[in-house]
Image 1 (tube, rainbow, N blue to C red):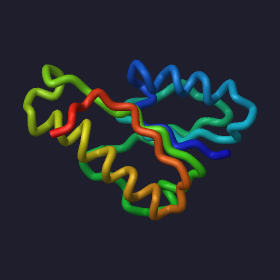
Image 2: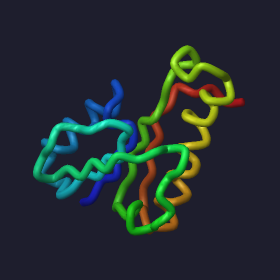
Image 3: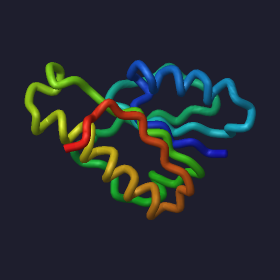
Image 4: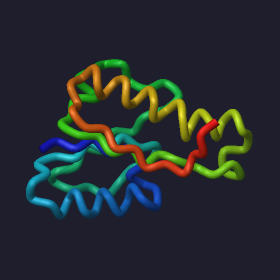
Length: 114
């Protein structure tokens, strides 16, 4: 199984990454991030700008996606930026991953419905 993991440098995502890399059923993990991750034989961690996500569907091709992206209002600096990170990014990632053939999308979020 190829897993696409978003938010791998955060609190939840880092634990998911650790578990995924220890699971022999997962052959590869792609974890796009804003900053580098430690190297691992089954990990690809491209640096991305989440404001301009890659549109190439090959980039988003995975069997399953776990999205643990998130921030706090304080870190985001504004309600608009907070909404963009906790809502807009996951929605766009889900759209791209689905178009690339992902069969499962899991979202871990603290964002309250608007």
